[in-house]
Length: 235
Image (cartoon, rainbow, N blue to C red; front, side):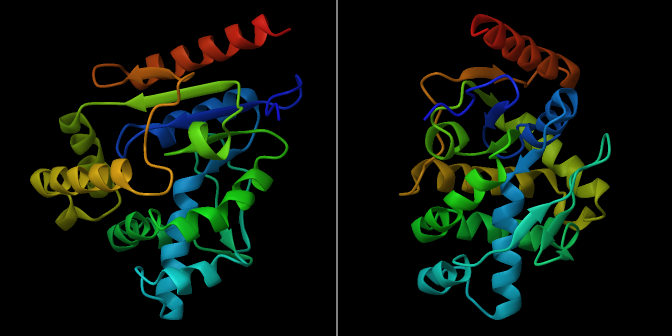
């Protein structure tokens, strides 16, 4: 199935490791083209949050599989420069899913095959009218036929610096120690790249961008230039 089959439906996918800058870049790309942002990391964070509330252990594959069978998650349309609000069954959980604890939970539930399989159709449904989707397996598993694929990466040191700054900005100074953040990223990278279901890898037809020494504006410009060129080639 061609997942960007007409000019009115734009699907851009951006994959990459934690701390590579995907979320901010994806948000700006979505704003530029006037399409929704699909933050798949928020979906896995929501799974971790709801599991915790319902007493389901983050390692309980059967319990998590049952949880995601009915998972009424949605995103509001974001104001310029803002993240979309994340709603679960009508409740705004946008802030609740952004704590270090829930972030760790998301990294534990996301490798579980039953969780990824259960959320696959939800992600595709949310993207039905077009979007910018960011995550770990957008171009390899969720939207393998997407025309506009990008893999955004950066050095471990730069990703740790960015993540520590983000934690400090969100009021989690105790969690923002650079060495601690770096060690956490090493662990997450290992989980993401070695998991059984949808390991993190670069799609064969993705454009790779190393943002270690690039300003955010330059990363955004490179992606938009590539998307515009690809759309022009297909017009």
